[in-house]
Length: 128
Image 1 (cartoon, helix red, strand yellow):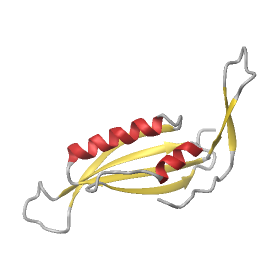
Image 2 (cartoon, helix red, strand yellow; image 1 turned 90 degrees about the vertical axis):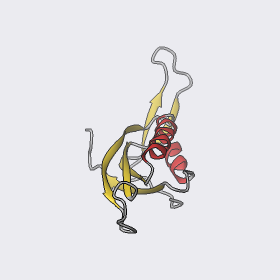
Image 3 (cartoon, helix red, strand yellow; image 1 turned 120 degrees about the vertical axis):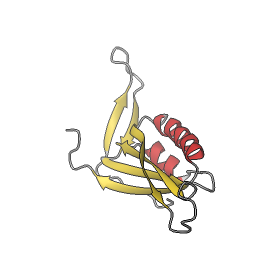
Image 4 (cartoon, helix red, strand yellow; image 1 turned 30 degrees about the vertical axis):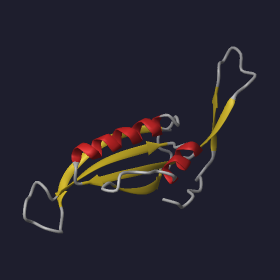
């Protein structure tokens, strides 16, 4: 997660009032989709961390869908108790992330029992 994500195609978003726009705020937006997957054994802790991440990412003005709960899978460590060895997964889809979203994902801090993984996909004209 420390790798800097290069923008595929840069576009700018102008934010401001149409009537009086002497100060327009421009942000760089990536034309790609980021999939953020969170995995953990405790579903309550996982949901708390997912809510915290959702609030932080939505404050960067990126389009976000999730957390999407995926089916729990069984851990391969021990098969003693089915319910204790389940790994619960939450998935976020981040569309058109901004620079502040990327820097937030680079500095993401989670609980020790939660693991995060990122994957980046080009949208190829998604949403046009």
